[in-house]
Length: 101
Image (cartoon, rainbow, N blue to C red):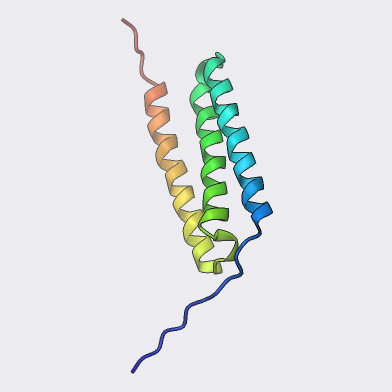
């Protein structure tokens, strides 16, 4: 009979979760504030940057990315890299259009 071993990790302290919650709320308020500002062509990259920071916090803290193996980090970083390439190509196509009416 085969046995499987599961890696165990220590549960995070409540203070870490409260700090993460505070940071996510701050970034949400920053997103709302940025939505009311006129940054011109930089509005979308600013919103995507704030969203990326919030997503990184969720992955690292709530999905226990901080205690993952190096292979997991390589996969996480590679997927973020290719997502950045995909969004960059999409936005470059979007920004290159005339949109004249």
